[in-house]
Amino acid sequence: MKILLISPNTLTVPYPVYPIGLDYVAGAVSDRHQVRIADMNILSRDALALLLREFSPEIIGLSCRNIDNTEAGDPLFFVNGYQELVTWLRQHSEAVIVCGGSGFSIMPEEIFSVLGADYGIIGEGERFGLLADALEEGADTTNLPGVLSARGRGKTPPPWNGGRTREFGSTSHYQFYLEKGGMLNLQTKRGCSFRCIYCSYPHIEGKKHRLSKPEEVARTALRLQEAGAKYLFITDSAFDSDIKHSLDVARAFKRIGIKIPWGGFFAPVRLPAGYFTVMKEAGLKHVEFGTESLSDRMLRSYRKPFRTRDVFAAHRQARQAGLHVAHYFLMGGPGESASTVTESLDNIENLNRTALFFFIGIRIYPRTELYDIALDEGKITAGMNMLEPVFYEADDIDREAIAALVTARAGRRINWIIGSGGARSAATVSKMHDRGYTGPLWEYLVR
Ligand code: B12
Ligand code: SF4
Image (cartoon, rainbow, N blue to C red; front, side, top):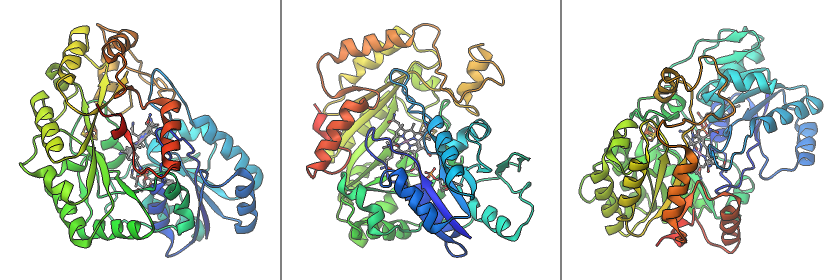
C-alpha cells in the first residue's frame, strides 16, 4: 500500500527536533509497502497538498509527539492543531488516517476522540505494520493489539519485542536540521526501569530496558555523521539508566570513529569512577541531568533513584571530565514547601558552572503514581479529562510562590532559566544555529 507518514510538529522551542519516531515507523513497513515521510518543518500546506495529489496515499500516519509544552507558566496546547490537520487531510485525501506517537500513547482515547482519525496505535509504531497488512488484506482490524478505532480498542500490548529498524531519510529530508544547528538524534535503548512518581516515560517506552546492540547503535551514529550531522542527541529516557550499556555504546562510538559531539539525558545516580572520562573520550559534550530537586525530602517523595550527595558527585565527575552540564528541576510536587524549595536553591548555589532549567508545576499524567496521589488527595476526580494539562498543587506552597522564590534567587543570572526558556531563548538559539553554532547551545549561558 502507499503510506504517507506526517510529522506535524513545528515547535521551535527549545529548537526544532528531527522526527526520529517516523524513521522507525517507516522502517517497520518499508519492505512491504511504499512509504514517504512529510515533515511539516520542511513542507508548506501547499507542498503537502501537491504530495497528496501526486503520491495519492492509501494510509496516512500522523505522529502526535507533543500534546502540550508541559509549562504551567507559559502553556501551549497542540492537539487542536492536529485535529485541524486531520480535517484538512480529509478534504484533500481519501486515505485511512492513523495516529500514534509518544504524546498520543500517553492519552490515546482522549486524543483519538478529538482528532477524528480512523485508527490510533498505542505505543511503539512498529505495530503500524500489522495494521497496514490487515488493511491491505481486508482483514478484521478490531482486535489488533494496541489498535484503537471507533469500534473499540484491542488489548494493550506488551512492549514491542520484534525487530526495530530505522529507515534513513534522504539528505534532503535531513537538510533542514543540518542547517538549523546540525543536530540529528539517536536511540540506544527503549524503556526506563526507574519509578519516578510523575513520569510518563516508562508507560510510553516500557518499564524494562530493551537494549540495542552497541555496535548497531554506533553504526547508526556513523551513518548520521556521514549524512552531515554536526551533533547527536541521544533520545533515551536516561542514557545511564543501564550504566554498562551506556559505557559499551560509548566505547563502540570510539571504535567506529564517531568524531562529532553528542549529548543526552542522564540521571545523577552513583556512577563508577571514570564514567564520564570514558564518555568524554567517545565525544560526549553535554550532560543534561534530570535532577528535579536538591532536597532529599523531595527526592524521596518523587522516588528518585539518587540523593543530593549523588547529584554533587555526578556533577563533579562530569565537570572534571570537562563536560558541559545542565540540571533540570521539577518543583511543586507532593510535600513541596517554602522550606524544601529554599533547601534546593541553597544547594544549587553549590553547583558550579552549570545551566539550570526550572519547571515549576508538575503535569499529572494518567497511569502514574502522582495521578493516584492527586486522586487520593481529592485534587482530581476519577474519569477527569487530563488532556488539557492539569498541574499538581502542593498543599503548602503554590506555583506562584515557588516561581517568586526562584526568580528572586536567580536575580540577573542568565544561567537560571524558568521552563525551557520560551520563544525568546529559542529565537536566540535559532540565530546562533544560523551562524553555524551546533548543538543545544546552553553552554553559552553557563556561569
Ligand atoms: C528526547 C526528548 C526530547 C529532546 C529531543 C532532542 C532531539 N534532538 O531529539 C528535547 C530535550 C529537545 C525535548 C524537547 C521537548 N519535549 Co521531549 N521528549 C524526549 C523523549 C525523552 C524521547 C523522544 C524520542 O525521540 N523518542 C525516541 C523515538 C524513536 O520514539 P517516539 O518519537 O516516541 O516514536 C515511537 C512511537 O511513539 C511511535 N510513533 C511515533 N510517531 C508515530 C506515528 C504513527 C502513525 C504511529 C503509528 C506511531 C508513531 O513509533 C516510534 C517507534 O516506536 C520523550 C519521552 C519519551 N520517553 O518518549 C519526551 C517527550 C516527547 N517530550 C515532551 C515534551 C512536552 C517536550 C517539550 C515540549 C518540552 C519543552 N517545554 O521544551 C519539547 C518540545 C521540542 C520540540 N521541538 O518538539 C513530552 C510530550 C508529551 C506532552 N505532554 O506533550 C514527552 C513525551 C515527555 C513527557 N513529558 O512525557 N524532548
Ligand atoms: S529516571 Fe527519568 S525517565 Fe526514568 S522514571 Fe525517572 S524521570 Fe522518568
